[in-house]
Image (tube, rainbow, N blue to C red):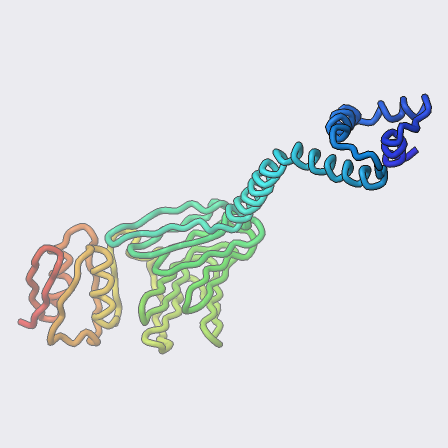
Length: 299
């Protein structure tokens, strides 16, 4: 017999012995008895059992609902925790690993596949560690020298172009108005806008002020800057000054000086005065220092 039928017959005092035992076995039997005692005090002479059954069921539902109210905040907290855990997992698996160097700072980086990166001053490098096995992709802003372990395709993305290799050594310089890639070992594919070029050891790809510049073969086996020296060949003086500022954390005042004039030479990163002489004497310039500000003048 259905629960509702048992309760209805009980309200009418019309249960047989077997039905009474089934009624007593109901899980809310004690609650029904207590409610019935309360209802008896207000029971009218003309007792409507259908109406009272409806009232009793409504009361029971409210009671059960109140009993289970403690679950609601718990379930809410559990749901929030589940969302947070899922969010944390997604966040940590999609979050990039970032490296940033400040002015006059360099950093050596070991990638997950044991590829090596040397990050020059005022540069940033980012990659996703969790997806590295599937995609060896990095984002570079600034300058870095790469020694790539053999394996799957290795791609360096810059806002000026992409560089792809399988296993090699190369340098990427991505600065204002300058994008340069030099291969030192293996081969490198450079993509810049609609131009694609394969570089062999000693070859360079240079975009200067938006123009492709052909460069002679280089004989050195690594870039000068990783040995604390910056070298330039027929490079605008503005690029020399910008690199000097990055390496020494200084600012230049260059009033009345033609910064488009080309410069060939180098400066060391470990002695400010010697470095200043190296970039001023060839152009017949003088300098004065005021804390970290340097003024250049013609002789």
